[in-house]
Image (cartoon, rainbow, N blue to C red; front, side, top):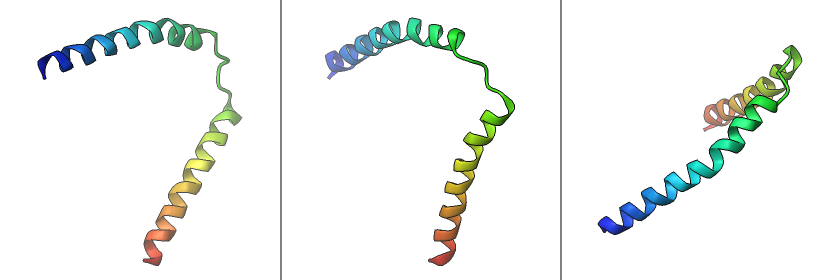
Length: 59
């Protein structure tokens, strides 16, 4: 059981080491969000929350 935990820890560290450079590059090279971009994120989230509230009230 201890070898399994050590193996998973090694795999997790290796995955972070592989993903970190790409994530850092994506954060620096991505376009900056503008005012209208945030509304296109907020509206679907509010729609899902409203739908869940509606379903909860119908029960």
